[in-house]
Length: 364
Image (cartoon, rainbow, N blue to C red; front, side):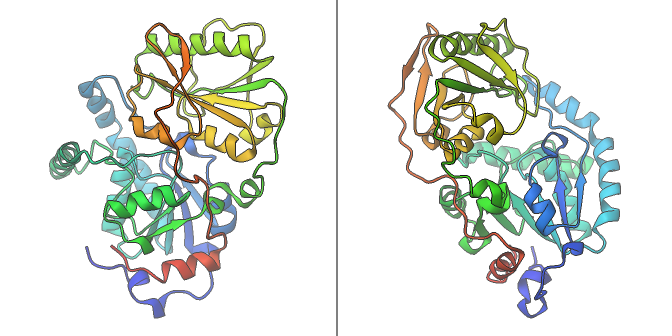
């Protein structure tokens, strides 16, 4: 793929940031409220794709449901094209799913000079599963030729993305290890989370005995089946309610999980993580990035492992404390995991700093 003119010819790069020539693209409707700092500081406009990712428990049903969205996605892209004519910089909310894979490919085909910056929106893993990677790439290439449509996400790395903005060195090291040039991986929690968030480190250090239980879309994303999800949540609510005075239960923004009957000291809450964290001393979830957010704010955290979850063990190395649910649904601390990296770091926060950073690299 030929170098993009903006990145290749540094003399042509603008000396001042022009918000009118930058767009925030939210590629999936359920994360429309993310990246408010990018929207307010870097971009004059935002486009939200009104489609949600679909993952079923069976491959065939997943393919059928995604194919049904092909026309809807084409309509969304037709509307998006009208917004891209005078854009130099495109901030992309996520690169992992099938929606963004198609959008990015179409954008690169129709607007080759736009610089695309992929934003990290949560925990992701880059594993050395070469056969699976090759199989997905072959499947997407085949369906692209037949339908002009890719059915599978292939992870955070996308050859059509110019720069990746990640939380810190853990992810930068992983991307570099997978062949991405270091100058194309920018570390900035401030850009991703906002300046206010980054200034809130350890602002809460409550010693109260209240807990936040952060739910995740386990069955909706085929991480486990519905029955196991219900049992896992019921077991956690029983354990947490016996241990803590109040358990604040927060639904995930992507989906609403059906809850079993809850003990009397459990309360469903809504709002931002920072607002809820003011009233708790500890946060618990399975492997949600919101746990790391709570830790950054000063709360103690516990990640919950279970063999019933289809998730890589390596994700649990991100958390300081991990407990496991055994086959008898009992909880015990799991000492297999040892975190080695600071999760949230920041070296860029302003448009000027971003311009200087992208001037160092060339397009892939």
